[in-house]
Amino acid sequence: MDLFNSALGKNITFLRPAFFIISGFIGIPNIKYYYAFLFFVYIISVLANTAVMAAIYLDHNLRTPKYIAVFNLALVDLLGNSVVDIFLLNHYYISYNDCLTFMFFCSTFYAMQTFNLVVLSFDRVMAIMYPLHYQMRVSHKLILTLIAFFWLLATTLILIVVGLLTRLSFCKSVVIQSYFCDHGPMYRLGCNDITPNRAIAGLAPVIILGFPLAFIVGSYCCIGYSLSKISTFRERVKAFKTCTGRLSLAAIYFLPFTFVYIFGSVIHPNARIISLSISTVLPPMLNPIIYVLQTQEIKESLKKLLQTRATTLHIKF
Image 1 (cartoon, rainbow, N blue to C red):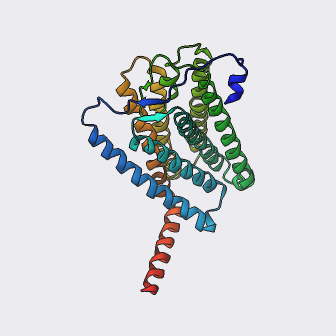
Image 2: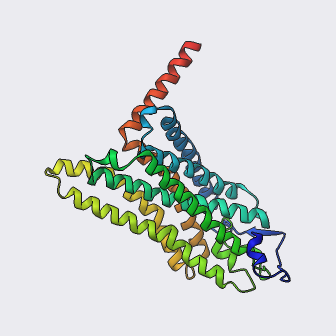
């Protein structure tokens, strides 16, 4: 972070508050029921993602390129949801450094969620468009390279976003109108030049939301075109069923965030908070459910693990 400050000169004094206040869900009616809902979603998310990761790790038959991406998505969902829930269960006061740290992790994990959907969409389009050459075209090395590239991209981009915040002086207010250290409401509290922050706030959503959404839409258009060439109606329906759940999941990911970033300046802060929180906590719960319900291999692997565990306990007792 000091790199950003040294580039601006050594004589600049920054006004950095000791802490920020997270407005959270204050003022939202019947918020205790929403907290109960978020807690329930978090518990299901932890259990489901842990089960998927365990199945893929323990079953050597699932060590395929596709399930490497599924494992990475489950890991990111688990970590991202945990970081968000720390905010929900934490006090409203957070120190300056902790706020930037949590912003980095929250934003990085969310960016990786959208990038991981790109990897999974790429895998799906290759499997449907090139079924005979899929194993030759999609290798472990290719998927691992894509995942590593997206981790590097997400980390670098969010480091720039957070780094640019360290050049701001906060003399207007210390109240962040969100349920976590949200970049948009936070940089608007700066009382010096926020032009670089506004620029990165416009660029980051294009990279994190725009490009992945365009790729996913384009990939499923290609899938639709390929499905139209399948001879029988039953085969078309069977192939399309594997895509419907993932399309619904992509809609849950992208639509609320796209709505917030387009109309964020005109919608009520409470509406913005509810929209962002739902689109943050729901997909990590739905991801493992969709992949387990639509993937026979994972269901069979989980059954074997449970049967093995039950047999082991029976022998012990």
